[in-house]
Length: 303
Image 1 (tube, one colour):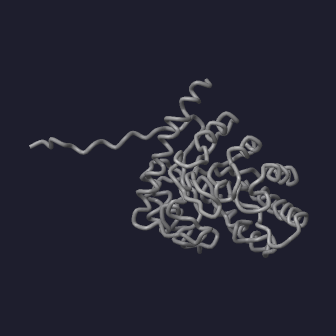
Image 2 (image 1 turned 135 degrees about the horizontal axis):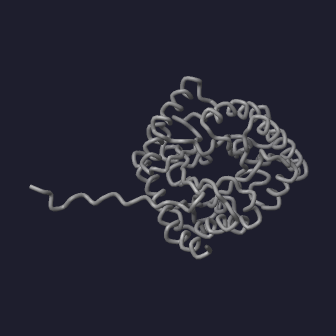
Image 3 (image 1 turned 90 degrees about the horizontal axis):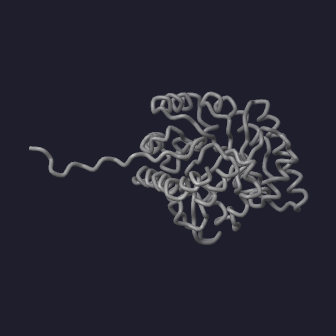
């Protein structure tokens, strides 16, 4: 007897604008590699951004674990959009051991090539008691050296508007780019970081948009002391406005979701729980709908 109530068909994927691809930071769905692969294959986007695998940073995986990662990515038909390093991040202040960052970059170079990506996310060193002028000078010196080595290795460092000397102000980001003056240094724009770091990311974007080579999508409400992360478009980060402005400025690249709803490494929150995959997929679908409803109509009108 036929089923009078067949299950509804899965909704068709909504394609992003021409030149734009969608990805996600895998460990935001869960620490385990199986979970990360399930989340990205569930979305059907074909791209993953790598940070930690089974709780270990990509640079720290042993050779066997890295080979296993490559095999699993290939079997899942997933390509790598970007690698998120710890270089100059919130856990490595300007007074820390610079050799630690140099070692990480050295370890990542062959792994990025093996994974088919040249983008490495960095930050720009939180201060640790230095006067402003010394903080700036040492940050510029370190990132210039990192960029020199990245260029030699065929990599591009993408600096995120997050922790560090150039994390919150457009003029500092532009100062950093001008001082380093290397094709191996570009910017990563995270739409949702302004809430936690107390600035308006949308306002910052107009000055840096031509230099953006990678984008993270998150949204939030609250204050730096009490930030709460939401689905894209439900917070106060003006996600649709940022995406429209990026496209208008000529951005063509990856939009990578970083929900922060279950996982926030800087807060030592790393367990997405049993619903991590479903929440991650729901977040991705919300981004697709926002693009379809609030971004694509303006793109079509502009044409």
